[in-house]
Length: 179
Ligand SMILES: O=P(O)(O)OC[C@H]1O[C@H](OP(=O)(O)OP(=O)(O)O)[C@H](O)[C@@H]1O
Ligand code: HPA
Ligand SMILES: [Mg+2]
Image (cartoon, rainbow, N blue to C red; front, side, top):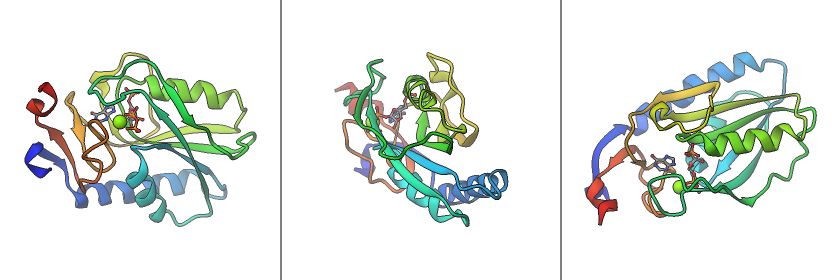
């Protein structure tokens, strides 16, 4: 699996440091509040669990499962809602947690959907932001790293459902998906 990686962009230590920094920013901004964290499955699994464990505050969490890459390296543009949140978010301070912001389509879809339910506030925390990938406007309030316009895998990010379990974020060798 490691042989399919062209280069490592962020090591486990880099990611841990980013989680600590983001958690500290969020804890300051939400002092005295109990925000609800909503993780966007499946890519967010590792980031969500690491970020949450750096937070010294009362929070609850839920997950929403959406998918639009369906095994490829580009957004299909069609978002499938696989599983919705179970928590009533009306009047809540919600922080949506994403592994990566790329075309922006997933985030735009989720923001529309969640804002309809009238949360008190809705902010976005993304480990990775790929600004050059943007097709629709979308912006995160908390960002771990700005990344280049390449297809990334690891630490939750997949190609055709594989590579999520790499402990780092790396660039997938293009010949892996050009086959
Ligand atoms: O900004 P976008 O172009 O919409 O891309 C970002 C989204 O795409 C990926 O999810 P994917 O659809 O691959 O589902 P997965 O998390 O289950 O892999 C990723 O985890 C983000 O949720
Ligand atoms: O670069 C990426 N890698 C994996 N999944 C993704 N979903 C959006 N962008 C990416
Ligand atoms: Mg994916």
